[in-house]
Length: 206
View 1: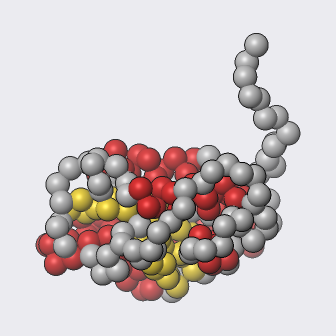
View 2: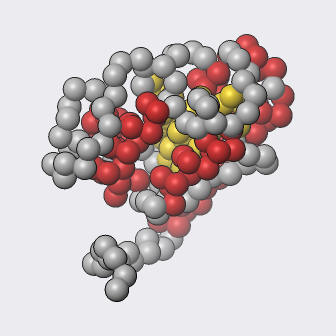
């Protein structure tokens, strides 16, 4: 089993990365692989609703979106981590995830997901709420913890000093591992995934 994490920060080893690494440490202890996918600082296109998506993903192939989708197809669970900018996730991660889910949302169905927000001080719960919406629209079980999934700090060293925040990250790791193991046990027992209706696409109510 493998968990794919997305670092929505342009800083490769900052507070968001530190939070994700804390989750990964626990996953490894539970025998589960993890990878932190770095978005980096390169430009990310917005989704323009062009409806030119393919099995590969987005029609635009000049950034990392389709590389992430290829890895997502092989992953069993996900963690999306974002820094907080103006009480909101980074615009970069939202542009990235809009295109990922618009083009290949079915790839994520029935795979557990956790959102993590990192801030110097405020805006974490609002950012956490935004990222969770990707899970609910894609039939993804949501992984919680013992507090909202957040860490506070100005940099990676600060984040490590947030004892409750780090504890919350470790418990995300434990809960993610447990959920993945339960899903695997269900498959082995012959429990089928839910039937999904997709025929109705209501544009307005008369």
